[in-house]
Image (cartoon, rainbow, N blue to C red; front, side, top):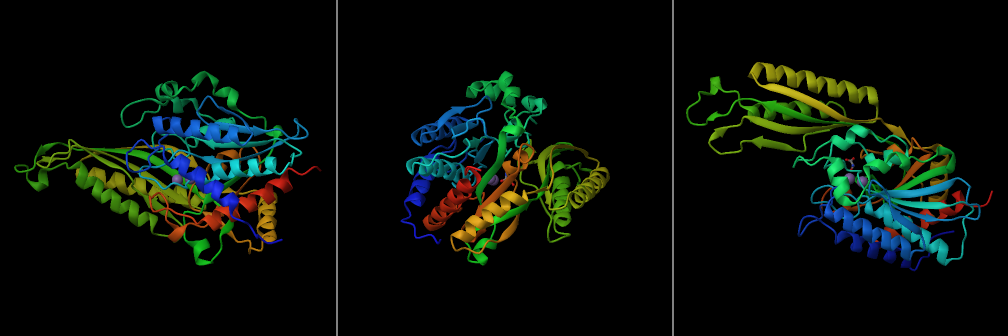
Amino acid sequence: MTNSSDLSLGRRVMAMIEALAQHSDDPGRITRLYLSPAHRAAAETVLALMRDAGLDAHIDALGSVIGRMEGQAPDAPALIVGSHIDSVVDAGRYDGNLGVVLGIAVAQALRDGGAIPACPIEIVAFGDEENVRFPTNLSTSHALAGRFDPAWLDGRDQDGVTLREALIRFGGDPEGIAALARDPARYRGYLEVHIEQGPLLESRNLPVGIVSAINGITRARAHVTGEAGHAGTVPMAMRRDALAAVAEMIGIVERAGGTRTDTVATVGVAQVQPGAINVIPARVDFTLDARAPDDAVRNAMVQDIVTECETAAERRGVALTIEPFMDSPATPMEKGLMTVLEDAVASLGIEPLRLASGAGHDAVAMAHLCPAAMLFVRCKDGISHNPAESITLEDADMAAHVLIEAVRKLTAPV
Ligand code: HGY
Ligand code: MN
Ligand code: MN
């Protein structure tokens, strides 16, 4: 069978993408951090879209939006299709959102086609996949897998607001988190469709690909404390300049990340205090994000970074503290589900290509609950975490048809 589509599914997907793109905490760009007002508005839009698609939908205690389509056998293990609706700062409109609206479009297409799946299907819009606002690790999907860390509730954002306080303001329920844990016996699998956020599919002229594994991630918050002083009077040799120290440390991170072709390391945030042109910086708070497909390689790289930064801090007479808050293991996708996705891709006349994911995803957390697999969708120039992120209508439509084929196969009567 090949895909002689009228693109109507793709158009439905792109329309829902635009509906979600309206919700941002920053005028003129897309920023939708976990539990922000824009996240609340987007969650309510997803709730309405799910209900329009015939799903029984609600927003859970942590702010995830859950839509459920009953099957012929209500107690049969369900299939989950999901992704996230939170974003980074000045984000693109497809990262995460695409996988959510594709799930909704597929559920609606099955219902409109009169298909009643053998088992229930749940569509989920997670809210804390980027982990940009709080020092968490895929908190909303880990909660479904029964792995929510209560310490996350006390984590603070850059304004000092705790996750607990933000959750209550959002309308969530800290006391209801434990009950979110799902029984593994009641779930047959998790599928996530996501933009590739890299250039491989485009280079191979393929609209979609099957994810083989997701790289491991270490994230940490670091703090360097030196001594404020007059920029005009303190001799260079007598300074304890926190920003000059961090500049050296950023070089250490960049070199460590580049020692292998399959590793990366990034300092994405650096906040300088007091931040005046004529004051020697007293303190810098910065972040570390280090990744590799192999956990031993990642851990060795992180250890090298820490050791070299500590040496630099000592030589410069500044204090360095490093607070790791994420240790996300490299996660292979489940072979059986990968084969279902490969067969679905091939049935539409596309060469099934397997590729690794340098980006993290909720599938890492969901793999603790049930078998998990991902389908990647080509994105222009591989750009993501950037407002220039884009996909084509045709690829959105193709992804929807692949997902329909896979969902049909996984929810067929046995
Ligand atoms: O950072 C990541 O890999 C993902 O976008 N959260
Ligand atoms: Mn994402
Ligand atoms: Mn992302």
